[in-house]
Image (tube, rainbow over all chains, first blue to last red; front, side, top):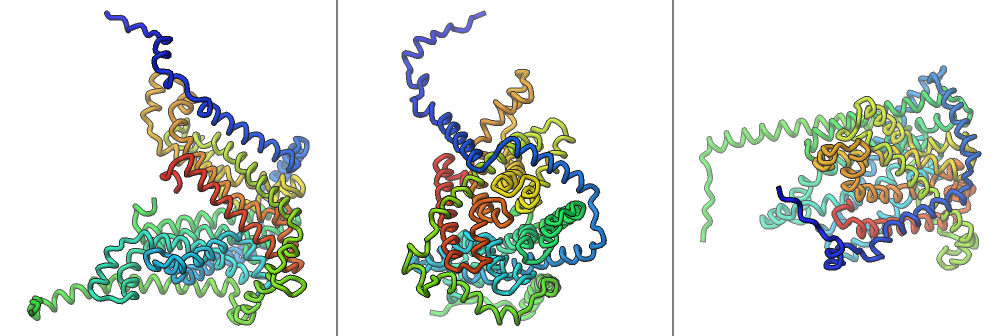
Length: 282
Length: 294
């Protein structure tokens, strides 16, 4: 039997120094990044008033709260909560639909293959970006100032903030569309509107429908939180019950939200599957 | 020159046309039916959400003039004519903005740590036991589905007013969201290295460390950075319920109608979000190349 050849490490090391010695910058980069990240973390703990005593007393409080949440019990206000849940679902559906309706024409203006002029596209894109930069809750506060407290303000808040996201997503979908079909329409003598209607929209609509469904789903979640600032729906009830420390009702409301979100997830998953097929869902 | 267009005989054309219209008609009916159901749902929703078009039309002018008002100083001038007066509180606001960024940073890091610890149990291919996977998955789902601001509302009562509640709320929400994404990365990882390591007699922990982890760290870091970006937005509204950050200043300004302050704070938030977006996008591109950016 042959013995494996004895390797002289020192000799190899002398012959291929690059393989054995990485430069100091490469070796130190990862530890340096970790140290920096931890330093910021520690600074954050100090600056944000973290202290072990506060943490543990809070934790024991939280334990008490969780104990008091059991069993979940709506008390006598189950009909009110169901109505509030319906309100939340309505807010999500209406807000998303409104946003999609308004975003579609604007997204055409922001798409490179429809509007080649950069001067026209740039302001539209920045406009959409700034709308997206403002959170839904802030829009809710603004709309409450305008139309008063209530679910209508929530609808408008979701519509405005989704308008920004949809404008961006739709224009990306349009830019991803195949140009060949548009050229085909143009070659057969179609006008610019014909190109959009028969060349672009058939390609883009399934993608857009999938995105709208996904947003209805995620807006069910957003619609629960805008109630916290007074824009209607189940979030309003939840915030009120938390403020008056009715923990059993709080846990019941949270359960209701979880069930509703799961149900909407399930339905919109099925619908998306039906509209755009298996491949695009995954 | 004449162009020869072949025209089919009459009866052949008729059958083709009939077949076509039948095929299209079915699709049209389905579309129409879907549209009708959707319209009915919308109508129902409009009643449920107390939509009142008259209010909208009456007050829509208010919405537009709101932007006019927040862009006007107390002296009646436009805000950009006197930037010093407009951004009078910039010292305080920058400090609050810094606090917001710290909240999202600490929250993201804590959340990512927990997600990292839990995700191997949630992934289908690495979880040691089905019951463990089921439990961890439900836990992550719970943390992800309950909105961050609801956690913040509860934590404000448990831990007292202040940024600590915000940090913990963001941490929990990030744990849920990142845990799911992380476990999906693990599920897509190549299992051959795991087999190789296991065949040497290594424990489960060693398999994770030396076979899975090297494949997935880049994806983890990319998602964590993306989450940080989202959390900056989230942290900017945590102040609405008293959980620290710039949101506190904003909600006071909006509720008390300090118009020019509203626009000033909004502009600082938007600019910060832009900068964070661009910076993390650049960082992810630098660290992981183009393909990891999606």
